[in-house]
Image (cartoon, rainbow, N blue to C red):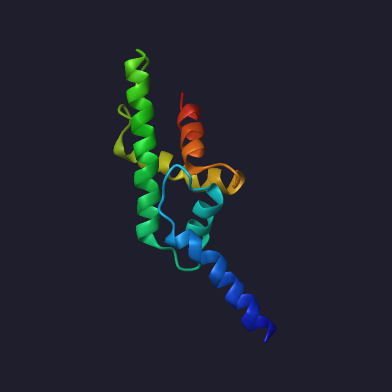
Length: 111
């Protein structure tokens, strides 16, 4: 009985993470749940990547408007993929942050 209750709690606690739309309000705790799930939802992983890439692009546009160099625009595809791959690690270390803030922190760390 106890195992059944523990299993139900785990399932219910994971449901909001997989059902949630990825946006500026998504927390790193949710992102960590997506990446650390026993069965990783590749559509959610792709959604996280696209969202982070959109934040990076917005930061590049802001830099260009302010006369500063664009970071992501100058990066190779391989470099971008490796940079996107740092997001889950960042989120594991900063679960209280939003995905938006984490993307900005990673972007700023590239300078």
